[in-house]
Amino acid sequence: IPLQETIVTAEKNVVLEQAGDFPVDSCVEFTVSTKKSSTFVLKLLIPSRVQNAEVYVNNVKQNNTIVPDSYVILKRQWKNNDKIKLVFHYDFNIQTMPDDKNVFAIFYGPTLLAFLDESELILKGNHDTILKNLSKDKNSNTFHLNNNGKTYQLKPFYEIEEQSY
Image (cartoon, rainbow, N blue to C red):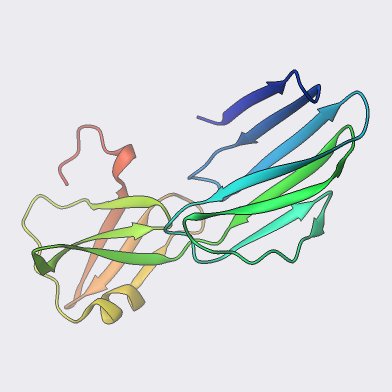
């Protein structure tokens, strides 16, 4: 479901609208609405799993340093209809269990992936090998892992309804 949020500040007489389909679409857009130009700071959260992102203001790439689990700080004189675009670049990553490094979950950016398989899985290789053999379909929100001569299909966990995983 596409996200649309609006924040109104009485103090600065500013409206900030957020639109996007995060996490499916890795781009989040903001529009500033103000009756008169106003200088203020915007802080945009960079989630902990994001290693790479780009920030654009009115389609001009900003030279911000991206640090996971922190904020990108934009201080400027904002004008009516200024546009901000935050583009996250997703990668596959593995999160291990604290008590057993052999039990892990696979993420694509912030999205937990689920194997569409009814049986217990035992994968071969180290984490780097597994990550190298993951791919995303260009035309859908499905993923594949080639491991030990078999191809597994994965989907975002939030899309699982009545399937076994």
